[in-house]
Length: 295
Image 1 (cartoon, rainbow, N blue to C red):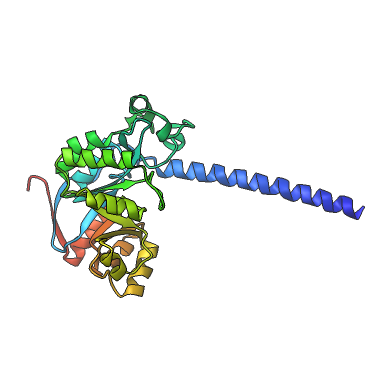
Image 2: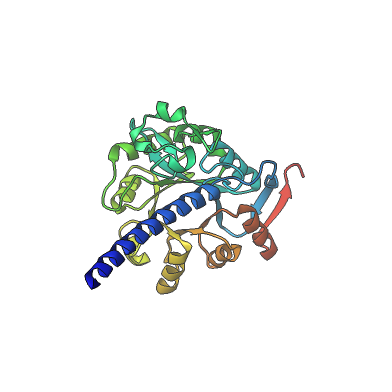
């Protein structure tokens, strides 16, 4: 009898674990989908020019994704109108090595299709609508239409691993940046140290994502730029008593105070979803001034 109860209890525990895990995945998928839905149509950023008195680059995270689908033409255009002087976009490569703007490996969240970007050609991807009426944009088109709208463009390479990278993919990105004469505007972000060095050897500015080495070690190895999420960047700054001469790009989430903490400690660039609110905070501190276009 005792063993029967133990077995039944074990079966019930396994069943409950599977159900909770399935429910967790469903909640995560729903949350991510809701987060990526733009705010109701008609809500638009203020069209304005910004003079940045403090040397900081304000990058709109995946374009202005609060008002348009992330990493799309409309989101990038709105980032320019809102006053960002830079954008950060995510890059993946198709089966035929065409770099495109897309964050996830899979199309599931934004397009409702259980397919990976890597498994489809650019022609096939071009026929797929995302969330719900946008199209996936190639890096070629993005640079052609928007390269001159911003002082800085950060391309976050998502397919790269810390210990490896596809040289054909990276070569395609390098070729596009050079063909569009955008080497002075573009920063390519990678989690692979070897990829960062390869990009630098080919004349591009590259940023090393989530470094664990000290600024002195990185500078000695030729690294000039780093990118970190705010919670790691704060620890890195305090442990090393500053940025050590590195160009530090920080990915900040709400609240705006988080971005201001880094701006006041001379971070070089801030990636944020809250472009308008951060600009307002800069103006309030005297770090920037704004005026509507046409004034």
